[in-house]
Amino acid sequence: MSDAVEKNPWGGLKAFTNARIALGRAGSGLPTAPLLAFNLSHAQARDAVHHPLDAEALRRTLEAEGFATLGVESAAPDRQHYLRRPDLGRRLSEASRAALVEAAGPAIAAHEEPPEVVFVIGDGLSAIAAAKQAAPLLLAVRARLADWRIGPVVVARQARVALGDEIGELLGAKLVAMLIGERPGLSSPDSLGVYLTYAPKVGCHDAQRNCVSNVRPEGLPYEAAAHKLHYLLTHARRLGLTGVGLKDDSDATLPGIGAPGQITSA
Image 1 (cartoon, rainbow, N blue to C red):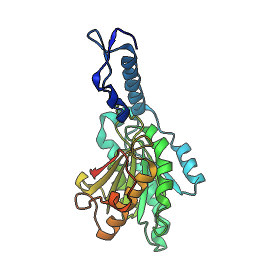
Image 2 (image 1 turned 135 degrees about the vertical axis):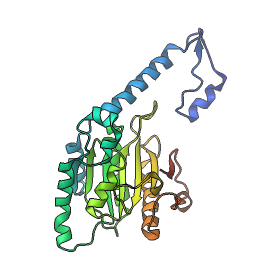
Image 3 (image 1 turned 90 degrees about the horizontal axis):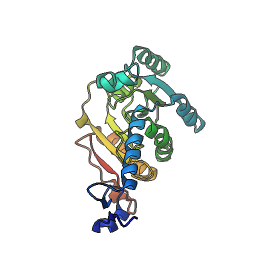
Image 4 (image 1 turned 90 degrees about the vertical axis):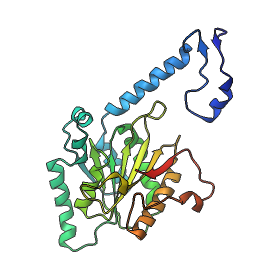
């Protein structure tokens, strides 16, 4: 570091956080290196918002691991509409709604038991997160759900969280888990959130959901996130609810798993 840069006495704390602290000072401004790093992170966050989800590639990855998949789109016809009209991202396009009704038809006609849980992967505000984190998380949680009826994994483009409610309702699922790219931060452009809703239907509100956030190797690792999600799924099925009435005590059931993630009612 140049002698022109004044060091910050908090420098030792940088080992414990990715937050931008103790950057130093050059005159009245930032040193060049942290300024360039900030600009890079800002560009990566913007790219994450606009980057398209390769839904077909994600479906191929999941099918290679033994998952059945379906592809849908929201009523937002493109990314610009999605960003300007959040309401369009919360409901299916007419074609996708018809496709899900058709997909559910044979099971209903055969009087088969509906799925207990349907996983939906949505691009949200970071398709990069959905592409990177969703498949490893699903593999980790599937290993814990041997006694569950799991529906097809639905890959949704231009999706908001509430899109999962309509998908779960059409497929007759008892629970829907929406795995969706979170709003990018300046140190986390690829963070995945999981929103769990019991008895999903159009019109559910946020107090009826639980959220596991910051799922990524540098945040809440896959195994830790799968443990939390399995805990919530199990108790949601037992109690018949999610949201403010369902609290997470999963850390107490598996000592040793700790990570800088968070779990809250959404």
